[in-house]
Length: 113
Length: 116
Image (tube, rainbow over all chains, first blue to last red; front, side, top):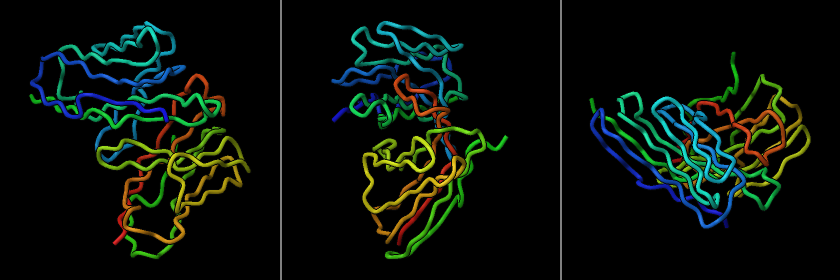
């Protein structure tokens, strides 16, 4: 069974601080996605990483896919209250033609003004 | 732009009752799926469909039925509600059934279901 483990589970920081959250697995994924979910809403895609070692930037957010395609990280520079939310990583299960997506349990981020 | 519409937004049921959660999309997406989200467990796939007339089981299918008679609609049926099915349910779609590159999924805003 493929699993995605996210850490930390919860993070509370002050505005302006930097942070990194992690998504790890013992399995290889063809690609990983990061979503952000706000209370009362569904997850919204932030980025998809597909190549081992790939780094993508989205304004103050930097996403990296591990060389072995088993892990990924999300780094936020100078966090703002608007970054508050649940960050989820997701990967396509390779055992079923990629039709099943596996989600991690998420990192809940709270940025205090 | 409606995107993915889920109804109802909230529902309270008694144990043993049945109900249908509705999901409708106006993007002509081939792939549709249902997830449940529970605290500390992330999103777990219940059922999915790669096109009209085609459905398959996900990670946690027991107690749920689905059908896909049209491209637009993908209802989720609870046959006999149990307290363990208290959760937030999300419907999601992708443009095509080709999931190898993990195409983006578009989520509805969820249905919050409580079973007493």
